[in-house]
Length: 195
Image 1 (cartoon, one colour):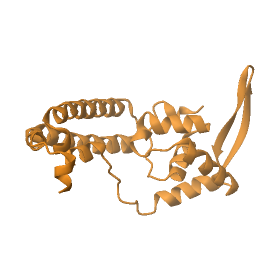
Image 2 (tube, helix red, strand yellow):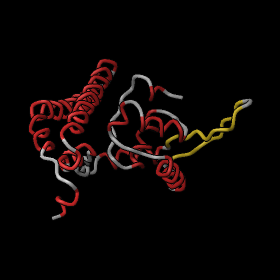
Image 3 (cartoon, rainbow, N blue to C red):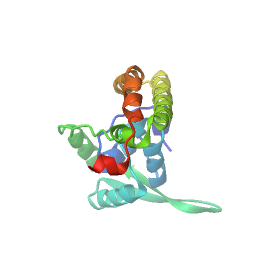
């Protein structure tokens, strides 16, 4: 496989199609490798993609002439489909990149917990705040490490943007945790909340 999973860094938008085209623009890949890239490493910051969305997207792009595939066999192993981007796929990828991006999506199960913190109590919220702080610190540390390894200035800038965003969340949480803990300590029952 190409260097897409090594030191090259690229940026993608939010659609599975655009994500697959971005991965394949850096080198050939199997559907499994594309999915793994969505879960781990620098592409995980841009999209959540499941096998249920990747394989249909690849099949549709093959029908449209944006990707091709070849079968690769190894002794003692099942055959693998290796996908490659076509020139039409590269053109489509550039076209999609030049479209105005959709608004960033931000979903946070932690914020839902914070919203209903009175239902779970202060002790539970304190533990979850500690977990969230640890999670953010690990994520920021991982992204800083990626910046150190990244040779592409655009990717380094993008990672810096992500680091700054997560750092602001971390700072807010550290500075305001006592407020949320106070709110959560005013515990209410589900029945009281419904009244």
